[in-house]
Image (cartoon, rainbow, N blue to C red; front, side, top):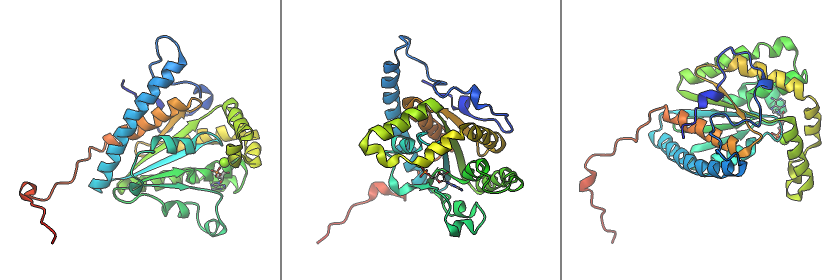
Length: 282
Ligand code: AMP
Ligand code: MG
């Protein structure tokens, strides 16, 4: 099945209306003709297994070749599935070549610098893949919604971010940005399961409920961020994420197709490997 990731991609300058994108939808996924969602889930799991194996192979190639740098930015509302996506999509990749960074509330040292300072320190080097669980986008999301800096200050950040990411791209970094789009109903269900299941209690935070009441403000902030910072070299993808099986397949496909577009090659072997004899040890 050909999964067309362009269906999920935001065009540069696009006026994004998240109300037009149904979080329960499954773009590019051919539903089972029976209409039975359980069959879709089962075939998505099989598809994900194949995709994961391909991602594992491509990441090894990235690491072996040591030429390209890959940055993946993941953003979502609370309970949007950032952690689950990292677990399910990147579960087989070699931990030596992938660095995951979770950006929390900035420390006082971080706040004493410009907002990109802490970000720049975690971008990938040659042969590496870096996954950002939250990112510099918080500086035009939570910061904007809560007036943590004046508007005249955050307004300029879309341009800074475009320029910063363009610099990274010009210097050899491939950038993929993914917004996991969930509905308020789905978030409510996931919060409820955090309350109901003791092993999920640790994930529950009262602060998340407060953020939930600002849902519409966050959607407006996401729409601006997506539209203003999706570029040819650093595109945003909006992944409908209420259905986890679809979310995992979509993110894996975005990763695989992006890595395939790099046309990487295994490094050349040393000469005369056919004649090599492994010496005895005495
Ligand atoms: P979590 O991802 O659930 O561990 O939560 C991290 C928290 O840090 C979230 O509430 C974010 O909004 C917050 N956060 C991350 N980056 C920033 C930032 N630049 N400014 C303010 N809060 C932030
Ligand atoms: Mg949280």
